[in-house]
Length: 268
Image 1: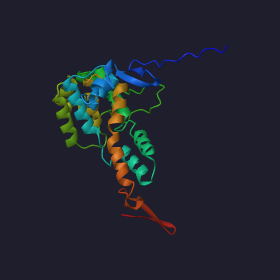
Image 2 (image 1 turned 30 degrees about the vertical axis):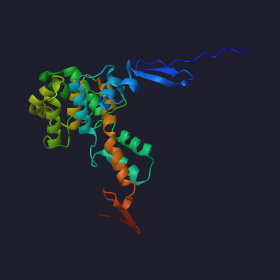
Image 3 (image 1 turned 120 degrees about the vertical axis):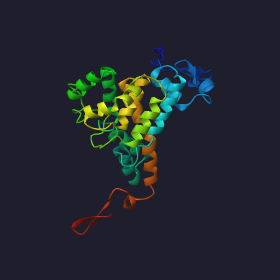
Image 4 (image 1 turned 180 degrees about the vertical axis):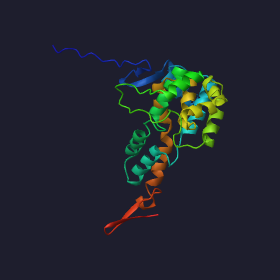
């Protein structure tokens, strides 16, 4: 007699499914942290509410959902000068697959300069320093590289723009908007102490810094914030990759190069 095959269960606190009566491989109902996704949430819940529920294991308050939505708008398109969007555009203009263009954007946008890991480090700093200006002074002045990490030492204070001259207007507008939702104390404290923080960092606040403070105020962990930052910046990368696809490399906006004989000349 052959051994009976026992079904394997997937261990997750996030998702529960009830199977159809005639097909155990198809779900009759799906629940995300107890909420009926297709029976109750669909048509009633906002996308950002689903995001918050997935990551935080509970439904957001109205101010939290509104703030996450505003942050999603601010991060949706970093613009073609951003390295991650530029990478996606390179994929698009070369005719790469959709997945390849997005993977290029994720790879380039994952690092410690305006990338996902910078948000992770900035959120770790908020967890350590909170609203203690002196603690921030010590933290910024110290080398906080983690021994054994795959990441190199940060070359600037995470959340600040090492190439900036002053706080960019969109960064100020984003900070003001997000602080207005009053979801926590860190954004408003950053507003009030922005000049002192920028002086300690020797560079102006970056959009990644405002995002890190907002994500921390909403209760996300550094790991969750890093993942969300990567995710929320993909729409712009996708749109710019699609825009470049039919144009061809000769119309690529970043100085294509044509080889003429044995010399290279820039095609302006």
